[in-house]
Amino acid sequence: MDGWAREGLVRRRVRVMVTLLVIASPAASGPTAGAQPEIPTPGPLAEPRPLRQVGAPADLTRAAIPPDNRQTPQKIALGEKLFFDGRLSADGTVACGTCHDPARAFTDGKRVSIGIGGRAGQRNAPTILNALYNKTQFWDGRVTTLEEQAALPIVNPVEMGQPSLNAAVARIAAIREYQDAFQEVFGGRPNGPDLLRAIASYERTQLSFDSPFDHFIAGDASAIDGAAKRGWELFNTRGRCNKCHALTDAERDVTNFTDHDFHVQTEMSALGRFLITKKESDIASFKSPNLRNVLVTAPYFHDGSQETLWDVVDHYNKGDGLQNPYLDEDIQPLALTEDDIDDLVAFLASLTSGDYREQAVKELARQRAVSRTTRPQRDTARAFDPKPPRAPLPHP
Ligand code: HEC
Ligand code: HEC
Image (cartoon, rainbow, N blue to C red; front, side, top):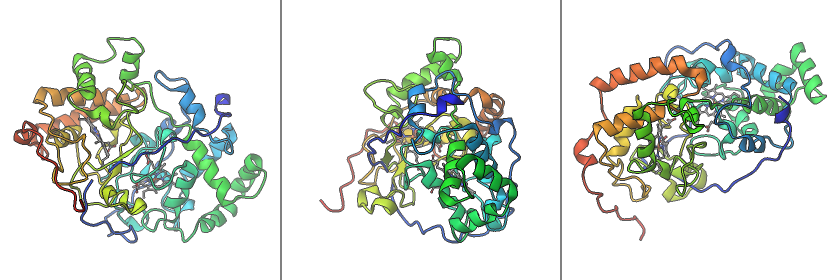
């Protein structure tokens, strides 16, 4: 764990990316959506992950550790305990791990998350894996650091439901075991900033590489099959995926699979980053997510609206959202054939870390079966149409 200790947080330029609107009300009180999920017991998949993994970027990993929150094994252990402790929530029933379950690659497998009292939120839970590399957190990038992020679910009325961070701290501070742990790690009583530091420190141990794709890039030509290799070509060429799922489109990016930017890419009804920037062009714009482990983090998009990777690729293929004047210019009909689509899915599947190999096999079979009968996004005629003229801006 020593390698964790150094180095400043590199802040990078954050461009703005985005989609179109109908309405997005603040997630104040969602409808009751059935049974509240259990808190998972942290098993081997919850453990801190090794720094040495095929494909892991040592420099980026060191740079992701802020100078005022160095990694220590004790702090990480405290953070892990807190991450799976329902006592941080108002009624003791919801932990971070409820919606970020290690067995599901730190997601919940639901379209939108279910929190305290069975209340449904409005967004799909992203994975914590590799969140340490995010330049912004949340689908709309409303905070930058993992420390700032961790405070928000605790006080979100449809997630953990505490009236304030201090209310959660008071609960923790009454527990002897936590008094001792905070004393050992931070030299004082439990308090808000240190509690957030411990959780963030645990999250920063969840780096996830070592996928078949990483082995392929490292020189093992047989690590991925022909379909995944063709999919990787398409990703960087006719599929145009690298326009947003790569740090730069000047050269192939084998590490990040995101541009850390926000894009409008559909007519989906959501305000997205507009809620943060209040710029009209940010309406329905969302962050390009990192695509690592994407096979095992279904369903997809900020609202969980896409069930399979075939649906996601069908969506891109038809150039969805072309009536939106702010649509990202990289969204256009792609003319991908059925074989091309299968190849892109094979490539996306090859980004699954070795830790989730078994889940990946099952999930790929499940999604393939669904895609054989249900392809709600498929519109082959549109996919092969020429790019239509851009819709006019409302205020020229
Ligand atoms: C009730 C379910 C739920 C709980 C509980 C919950 N989260 Fe989340 N988490 C979500 C959802 C949904 C999002 C996306 C919300 C958005 O973008 O507006 C999210 C986003 C995140 C992100 C941003 C990841 C990214 O790629 O942008 C991080 C990090 C995170 N949660 C960590 C935590 C931590 C730490 C806790 C506990 C303190 C926690 N979550 C509790 C559902 C939950
Ligand atoms: C214009 C930028 C852009 C382009 C081009 C693009 N993406 Fe995306 N991608 C995004 C954004 C933004 C999201 C999140 C959208 C949302 O949540 O509404 C996303 C989401 C996804 C997701 C879902 C991830 C998740 O965790 O929910 C997958 C899979 C994906 N993209 C794959 C691809 C593939 C494959 C291509 C090429 C065929 C592609 N993308 C092209 C910007 C882009």
